[in-house]
Length: 241
Image 1 (cartoon, rainbow, N blue to C red):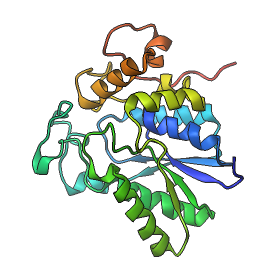
Image 2 (image 1 turned 45 degrees about the vertical axis):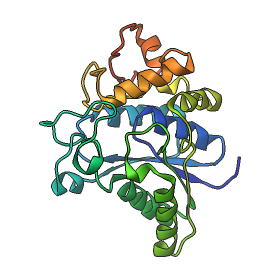
Image 3 (image 1 turned 30 degrees about the horizontal axis):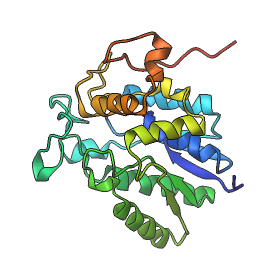
């Protein structure tokens, strides 16, 4: 562990939760930042708060980013459009769950907070191995953003992507190794934000496939005693005591 601080982009999903655990073993103190951009799967905001509480991060900040909804329609923001199935593509060959510029914007805002706090390290759960084809999840994109932000802020930044070259099954194994296993029981994945999750959207299928290939049960199902393929989403638990 380095005694340098870091900021983790925490969505409330399994990937960012795994990255939070990874960061906590390598940096101190650790802060988390979550973005409310009008996503239809808004339950993940509550999940992010619960995970941050359980992880004991120093600070957890939720930042509203309403402009993404103002710039155009996509299935993660527009409740009238169903998220595409796994492997499906739409406009320009991208799935309709692609939110243009989302990760670039999130990293820019996280970097602005890092600059104000004197922090040089950002951690984000993007991956170009098991992903939906989003161009802002690729290693070359992140490297370019890292350089641009370091230059634009005149502040050296390192953007860490622990999951970049891992399959979903590998990321689950990493979650176990880094101590995130229990926290995964409080994550949410379903693009539709359904209660219970739809079980058919790309995110639900990718999550289920990852646990199956890793040969371990989904801790969310274990926590809730659910055996069906489409588990209910997380709900913040009452504080112990």
